[in-house]
Image (cartoon, rainbow, N blue to C red):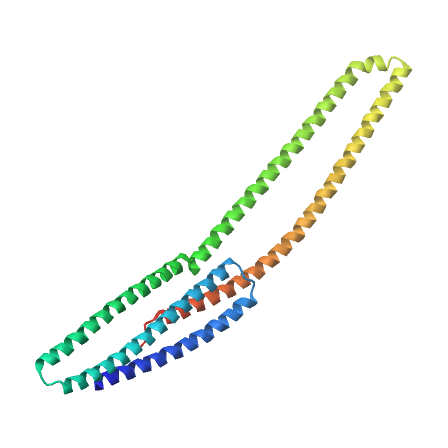
Length: 278
């Protein structure tokens, strides 16, 4: 009897200690949740919140198991008292054996039921552990982010290189067309030059043709200057966007550092919660 009372008192002390630990962890998780809500949420934070919910479920199941164990201990203590009273009232050995057999049979049945409940809880805990294992850890998230950043940088470099190649090709193609036109024009002038200067009308026609060529060249030059101004405007716009992107990158870096610090705190809380209660 004294041993049972001592065990029950020890279990009650453990339950009080567990409840106090649970209250402390819950308050820390509440503060962490408020900090996360103030920062911009993304898919990683959503996964972290899901993981915290799973942790709370495990703690709730553990608390229920502790309560069930205490209740079972109290029931067993009552049964022991009843059995002692019955044994005191039974004189013959046959009656004692019958009482013991009956209680043994009831105890075996309760044991089998408890084993079934324990197996069900074990399956639930195993399923929750698998779900937690499916969630990437902090190190894996950082590695995924680094790899995505490297891939994005590589794609951007290839895109810039492709654009430069297309721009060079278009410029060379335009130069080729101009050179072909100039060559054709020079060949035409060379073949008709002697006939044109032999008469005043031919000479005037030649001068008019040269003036037309000059005007066409001036128009082409104006067009090129306009294209240059447009490219300069685009360059200025890209420069401003680059400055804004760098500022945003610095902000994201600071937010990432804060998020990593909060994740480290969460890992510490998980370690504390997973430690065996004493």
